[in-house]
Amino acid sequence: MNTLVRCLLTKPSMVEQLAKRTLSTSNKLFTFWEEDDKGGYKTKEPYPNFIERMRTGLAELKNEVKLWCGEVKDKFESDPILIYRPYETDVAWRFKNLNSLDNWIVSCDADNNEGYSHCSLIKNNQGNVVFSGNINLRVPKDGRVKRAGYCNMQTKRFRKSFKREDYLNWIGYNTLVMKVRGDGRTYLLNLGTRGYFDVAWNDMYHYQLYTRGGPYWQIAKIPFSKFFMASKGRIQDDQHPIPLNKVSSFGISAQDRHGGEFCLEIDYIALEYDPRHVEEFAYEMYAVDKGIANV
Image 1: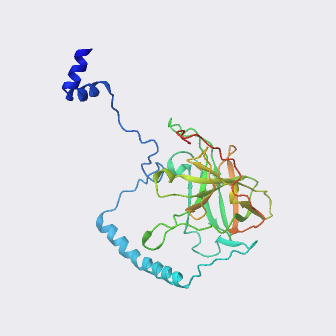
Image 2 (image 1 turned 135 degrees about the horizontal axis):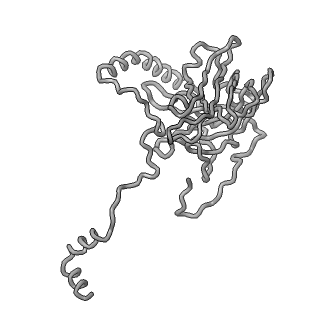
Image 3 (image 1 turned 90 degrees about the vertical axis):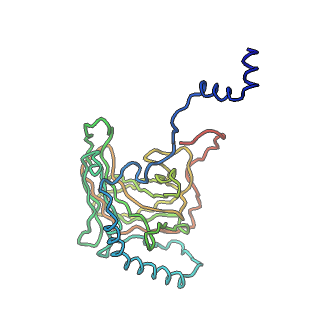
């Protein structure tokens, strides 16, 4: 033992050699690192070459400059003091225009070879949008997918001119208002709050939309304080209120344990400020000791 200590003191290089022999090394584990912003669902289309990218960019340049001019005009004409009138419904999306569906994306499990469901988003003769399809619970026999059966409609990523990312600012509202005519099913409302860092790319706030069914319309009012936080379908232990100034997407999902046909007709999706609703967040937030990860 004394010989070993004497050698370590006289030859510091032996310490490094001993450490290399006793300490095992392994690859770094990026526990919270996301490879891409699609959550693993990458597009399979080939990346275009330089000439095609230049042609596409020049073709969109006129529209981007037009958007930029509109932003500059709104900047000088807008009033920084905003007054939200109580009980006044401000429509965020209505589907009366011909191009009203261009900002929406419809997807299902069949698009990713994870199921056999299908859905569509079309306008009817009354000027409303109809989200309909079939939920198929049959699981593909690939040994990878465990559950199947979902359909989704979601807004595209909000962008300013020249493809700059943008957010919706709903900080002055506290209630989501929807005029719908459903089929008695329960739908899932999704509010995306994609952040800058990759750990927040899949942050989503959810709440249920209960429909009555039948031929009558219903107006559903859901406070934002009722939405709960989840990531990739998993409800998080560490809950937070929605950052309403950073809303990046809004969507509606149809998924349940029964399957079959579904149909949801939407007149408008709006916002409202209700002064009677003073609740900030409906769920308990536990004080967790330091050093414990909340996942």
